Image 1 (cartoon, rainbow, N blue to C red):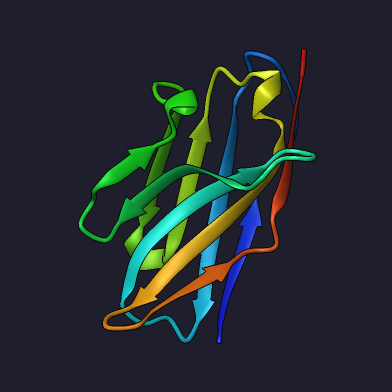
Image 2: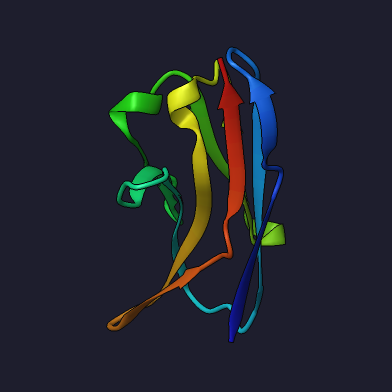
Length: 118
């Protein structure tokens, strides 16, 4: 079994910064992609940023230039540095990890709340 534990969420005023962490543990095998998703109240979960084991990165248009995803492979940990936060960035942020080769398995963290006040 694989566990993903997020931390770093909280409350911040618009323009502020937060750094989220996601630590993976357990039976980790062939980690392909780690990503961050968010879900605002009443909305669908959406991709924020993702990074592959090869270093390819993808950002949602709404966060480009403000958020940075990175990983520490030795610690099986992913980070999301969020700068210039806006009220519309408010939501529950989930970490996801895709593992496998011929069959991919996605694991989710429990989520961490990010609230940005105007």
